[in-house]
Image 1 (cartoon, one colour):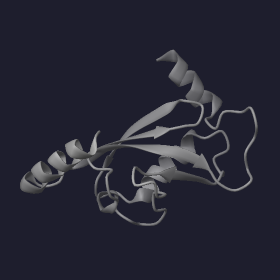
Image 2 (spheres, rainbow, N blue to C red):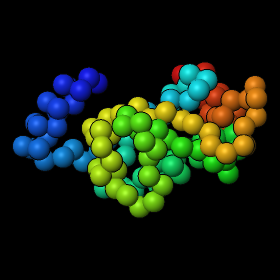
Image 3 (cartoon, helix red, strand yellow):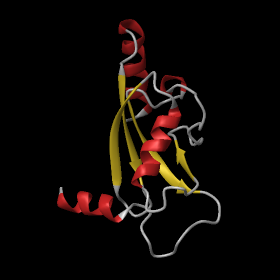
Length: 118
């Protein structure tokens, strides 16, 4: 979505009220994209938990980079309080720390099978 489209959406949503949900897509380095729908009142930690469940190593440290190029907050910050992710956004997945395995996908085998089947 271009910035002018976001501004138009922002202006129209301020007149009508915020949408109740947001569609978030998480783009992984290997090119796979996960999509989920979240309530705007949910904490950002719900998004982190959802992504962690799809990982090969669920205890891995990672960041979700928002369109503002800042990491999505980990705490109880509401999704609606994060700039530019309502009504939809693409978040980029980035491993943090030294826990990376070369040549392995970040996603679990089960999740990869589901993406190939669809």
